[in-house]
Length: 63
Image (cartoon, rainbow, N blue to C red):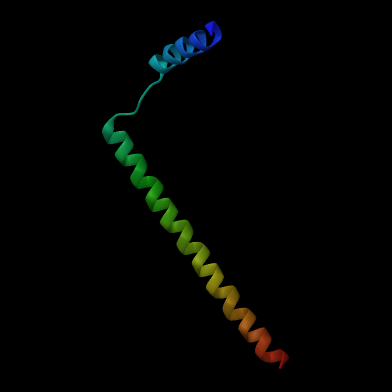
């Protein structure tokens, strides 16, 4: 049981050393992640549409 208590004390000690972001930093980083996710999703969607269009042309030529 002493090992568990020592572990929890070490966790609490390390958590006091953590440099937590301010609320404004957290909001800014969240916005960056959301915008980046949207950009990547639109790029993937665009690539999917182009590939689908090209494959439809190839399939129509094969008939």
